[in-house]
Length: 125
Image (tube, one colour):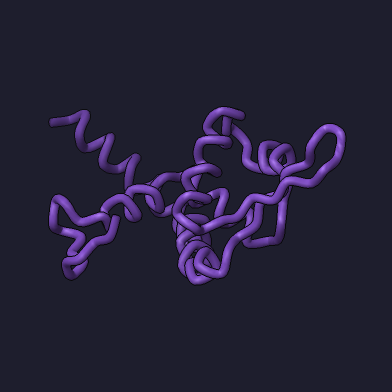
């Protein structure tokens, strides 16, 4: 199935919205960021990304693989070992994902202060 119109994220039917939705997902962003450090096994991803359930990890990895952003390789071991890595297409996002992560880490104090100020002001109204 192809998309034969000029992409426009403001158009309700534009498939780019699906991409934005995927990339706006915190688990997808965290997985992409972690996989940019190199190929990683499922259980290591689960240990590294605190708070993600096995189910959500599996679902998110499948979505990212379907989108062509990561690849999955199974090794014939007992039990089977599965490793994930960022694809060349996914690598085109590496700078953006890293910048967003760094921005969030650099600005969290100001964001928390703004939230506190807003919540205090909202309580008065």
